[in-house]
Every structure is written in C-alpha cells, then in structure tokens.
Amino acid sequence: MRVTSGTARHANHKRIIKLAKGYQGRRKSVYKLAKQAVIKAGRYSYRDRRVKKRDFRALWILRINAALKPNELSYSKFIALLKTNQIDLNRKMLSEMIMENPSAFQAIVDKVK
Image (cartoon, rainbow, N blue to C red; front, side, top):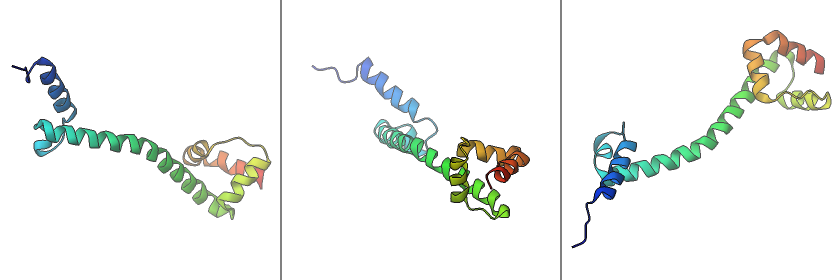
C-alpha cells in the first residue's frame, strides 16, 4: 500500500497551520481552509507591498500641497520651481521637513519663489 500520511505530509500540514496562526474559525485549524487562507493572504501581501508605496507618495503630496496653500503656490508649480532651481529634494524629505522643521521648508519656498 501507498503511504499517504507520512512525515513529509504531516510537516507540510504543520507548516501551513503555523502560517495560519491568528486567523479566525476553522481557517486556523483545518488544513484545507488554512491553505486557501494562507494563499489568499500571500496574494494580498504581495499586492499591498506595492500599493503601500503609492499610498505614501499620495500622503507626501497632500502634505506638501497643504503646506503650500498659505504661500499661494500650487504643488505642481512648486515642484517645477524646485527642478528649475536644481534643488534635489524628494517628496518624502519635503514632507518630513514640513512635519519636523517648518521654518526650513519655508526657507526653501522663499528661495524658489
């Protein structure tokens, strides 16, 4: 007879159940459901690692745009002025500057105006 419940299969099932730790209901304890849940979770995590980059860029742009409103300058014009003045600061650094050191950001705005 063929062995269907050997140590290799048991180890694989254990690995999947371990990956499903924290899931609710039978998804954490029943192999078939746990396997489906783990595969789906892997797809979501792969996709969302890329979406996270988009989300952060959008957040940085929002912060920069909001900080430029009192200076009567739009985001797109500000970025264009930065490029013409050859100031190489990325959006993340500009956003952090707005949060931690607003006077330095204001100095950059004054310089490019």
